[in-house]
Image (cartoon, rainbow, N blue to C red; front, side):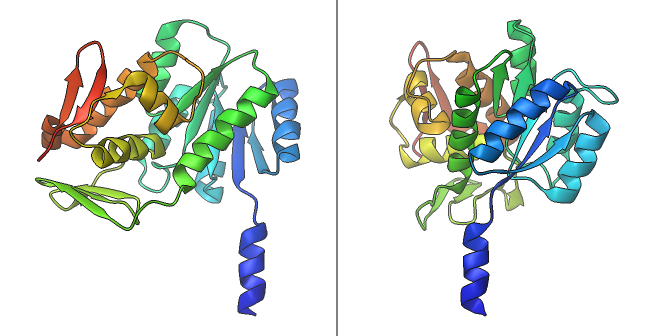
Length: 237
């Protein structure tokens, strides 16, 4: 019986919620992700997206920016405010090329963004990288900086014993910096080690996430040091 349960667990596919009000785009993404081995849930408006995210607790959400009922930015805000859904990785899908739209999406909690039109191959790579980030086994180790504690095995960060609601990307970012504390990490290196990108993309993605991380760390943000023109480091306690 136990063996059967283990086999069933191993066969379970990561569940992805795709939210898009364009039927053709929804079908294209669904077909490609199913072929890549994922279990798919779909929603075509923001209200339905919130309901399905809460009910199914997907491993990742692909969220279009322009949606009826509740737009993508507001859906992201709501999911990040709720404890149960705060840690679900979110990739924003947007036809808007303006930098401000990408920055706003990242500021309110999206882990990544893809601008339409995009290649299905690139989207699948982004999905795999983000899921890998959350699933990578971490060392059995606890790191402490004053009142800030990072519990790697439990994927948990606390400040004065109060749990911080970090996204998967924010947790990976603080972990990488903590494991290399005292050493400056360039934006390009962080993009590779945290986001999994081997090719150069907009390094402002790193800056946006660092600003969000500083806000959430509160008094412990004093340990995050910006090295002008180079990157970031976590100072020695």
